[in-house]
Amino acid sequence: CAQLLICVKLTPLLLLYNRIKASSLKLRFCTNETQATREKFVKKLQGLGFDISVDEVTAPAPAACRVLKERNLRPHLLVHNDVVPEFAEIDKANPNCVVIGDAADNFSYANLNEAFRILIGLENPVLISLGRGRYYKETDGLKLDVGAYMKALEYACDIQAEVVGKPAKMFFESALAELGVQPQQAIMIGDDIVNDVGGAQQCGMRALQVRTGKYRSFPVGGTDLPSVYTSICCLNKHLLVQQLGSNQVVDDIFICKKHFGKTLCM
Amino acid sequence: CAQLLICVKLTPLLLLYNRIKASSLKLRFCTNETQATREKFVKKLQGLGFDISVDEVTAPAPAACRVLKERNLRPHLLVHNDVVPEFAEIDKANPNCVVIGDAADNFSYANLNEAFRILIGLENPVLISLGRGRYYKETDGLKLDVGAYMKALEYACDIQAEVVGKPAKMFFESALAELGVQPQQAIMIGDDIVNDVGGAQQCGMRALQVRTGKYRSFPVGGTDLPSVYTSICCLNKHLLVQQLGSNQVVDDIFICKKHFGKTLCM
Image 1 (tube, rainbow over the protein chains, first blue to last red):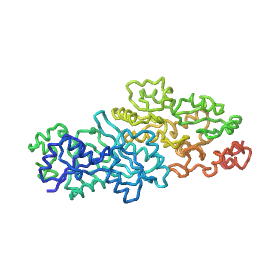
Image 2 (image 1 turned 90 degrees about the vertical axis):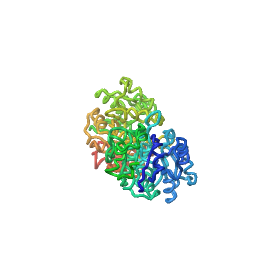
Image 3 (image 1 turned 120 degrees about the horizontal axis):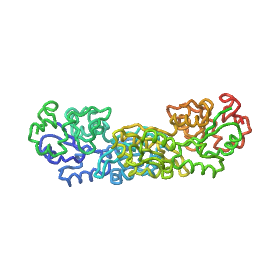
Image 4 (image 1 turned 180 degrees about the vertical axis):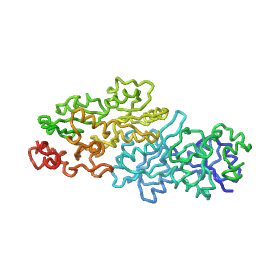
């Protein structure tokens, strides 16, 4: 069996993660994390007990670098300071495009204006966005994500950004290719109805939404509701990891008999 | 004759303005200025030599206050500090909506997040925007206008803002009503193809675009090109005011014979 389970965000899935690693299932972290290099991201997860390496992570910045190199684009970066090292080998002199990521406090009025002026001054403005997330949750509350600022620049310049992170189809296809599995063999688990669930569904994968992180109860247009919308909340309550041996909970979470056969009933 | 000439922005129109004031034409300033109260705005114009009073200005903040009062809305303000006095009489405790204006440096990440959290926490989020401008020009370059940040919040919250400034039809209708003229009797002069020209055209007025301020050569979808797109640049070069007696230039600027009869050939 080659089913792929993709986990996102730091949901308390460590024990589940370890069981998956010990099984024959393949797993990959798909993150829109653009506030850190993959090295830092992996180090953070390792600190939380995850046995993970950089090779197991699909992230937007390396995808953006591939696009920049292929098209001879020299970016002005409007990103978080901590992700700048991912662009170390990219020529950034005399920029002919803008790359926008989750810049957090770097989203000042002055910095937005600088990115805007570069774009509006180009004959063919190219805006590459490391995601299109609306918002995310941190310990001190919900925060605007890169998608909101991408929309601001799109509107100001009357252009369409090219998204290289989730929910871009290319992003999920990369993750699947890196593991050598087909979309219908894979399941996406995430807390974001658009970026995780919607993106995976667009790519032909099945998806589960967890009631953690930015989960909210209202549906968002254009995305099929994920299968276990109503019962997956137990992922948040450690019930999943405590009771992984229980057929009932496993049925609840993975709907293994209906959708995936028995391979996911660990 | 009751034709209305509406001027916007601080184009060098003082001499023209004085000739209009001395004529039988009516004139009104329609501004999306939300970085100052009308009092301050008028004082600035008076300082530049314009014989103008607060009563001759149509601006978004008073329009927003009317809407807030009518609907018992208590705003959280994401606006420029200098326009806050326009909302002095409005109850702002326990906000049930957000009013966004051209907040300039107040468009920090922290302030955007605060406005976002209020909106996303409301059962029926109401976002009132004092305009939908993309950008404007200041002495130190182009700057993002309120529209870009309105789009960011619209996207993050999956809502539509209610615009009370230009190019809202209501805004132009107010200006026309205040002077008692019909749309077809009026002409709008402005530098913004969407907010000035497009908004006026939607309302049944004719419009001229000046090649000053934020003027750029590319057309914007959804708006008819204004009549004298190619020759109005002389407004920027003081040629208009220098040569107002010349039939040729007046023909160029106002196309008086074709569109307005002779009343505008001052």
